[in-house]
Amino acid sequence: VVGYVDTPAFSVPNLVKRWQQSEFRVAEPSELAQLPVEQQQQLVAIVQDPFTSFYEAEIVHAFAQLAARLGYQPVLIPFVGQGKAQHVKGFLSEFKQTAERVYEYLAPLFDTEIERVGVDSSTALVFRDEYHHVLGDKAAALNVQTVIEWLQGKAEKLDLESSHRRYGLLLHCTEQSFIPESAKHWQALFTSVGLQLDIVQAGCCGMAGTFGHERSNLKESIALYQMDWAEAVKQYGTSGITATGFSCRSQVKRLEGKRVRHPLEVILSYLNH
Image (cartoon, rainbow, N blue to C red; front, side, top):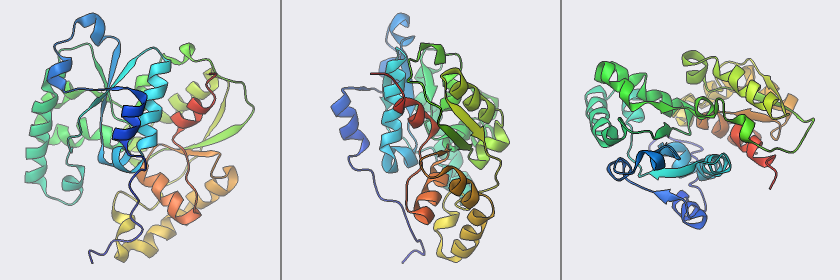
């Protein structure tokens, strides 16, 4: 009816159930801001995005598990839409209103010792890219990190099984253009824990947010995937290639029939229990 094809299915079990089963915490920013500084320093707040939270809850949960193994207490901030779809579709006045609302909602965290992380890299970068254009310099106070930015300097705390398996990494286009050093940081992290990670040079996977789900773009979307990504997936296999972008993983899953992992999931799989 709306011209969409191959839309992803919701996560089962969903994030709420996974969170309850793990007994991790959910808290409002205003509540966290009231905690003593000593407690704040032990927390990492997850700023949700609509993609991983609703369609890949296992990745949000994986990040929480990894954070816990590193000695942090993961806390889930209740979901508030950041307006990325509004921006992509050109509803800029509505997007500005959303950005202002999100800014006010997260404001209690600005002067705290609580680090904030967005699990989906492209959505996490909305806070310092698109938000900067509508909020100006004050957007910097949001300070939402990508997963690899948050993991910097923390790898020495990990106890991993040794492995000679080689993996390949494909970055989301937004991450490639905005923080291209992310690839080398992931590679360095893998190396530091005894894993091998190749940085795979590739263009757009062809999904590009909702672009690849629009029926009118389907042929072009598949053609873009076949230019670079198809060969990379063939070389490493769906179990050996990793991708930081939700839309990228969605594209591989629909065209190859198998799910590929976020690099943090690979690291988690080698943790000694």
